Image (cartoon, rainbow, N blue to C red; front, side, top):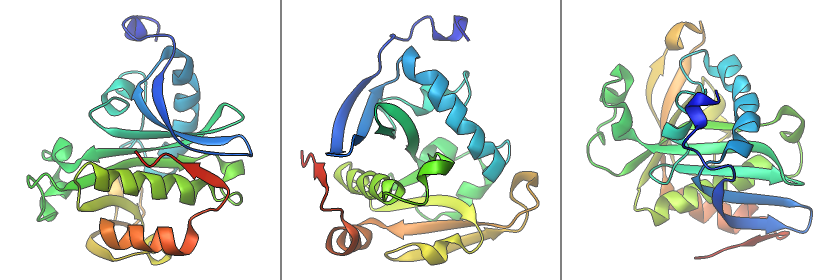
Length: 208
């Protein structure tokens, strides 16, 4: 790993997007630093449990997904990384067969959610996951995207807010023996829901 990170700075460069009085904050990562790589890789192991080996973050591709050309957000609690979400233009995956089912491919209006994970012990309370997702979707809109897409296990989209379309159902997602839905979320409708229904009063947002 040391050889792969020779050209990476020790400290990550990021912008704090939201913070609370309870030591929780969300950062937009602009450049990943060596100090954060071990925590991100450790959390990423949960991705493989859910999505199989097709979706993963490792030492070889971490810089590809955590940079200023993608949309990576880190969630921290007491300065510890407890989760992250990464948005990537769908055109990154134009060689993957699943992307050809999306009529918006090559229209530069769709952000694909490559990874979204929160540590297990932070998933059931605090609203951390919802806050992270809300900020991610809001920033996707700021970047000019109209849609956010992604893959989730069948039935999960029923828990989503906003306008959701199921584009394609994959009965055996990359050998996981599980059915996965490829969904599309319309951004502006989702933002209306988040801000008027579930936005947290305890979190301060950077509106820039």
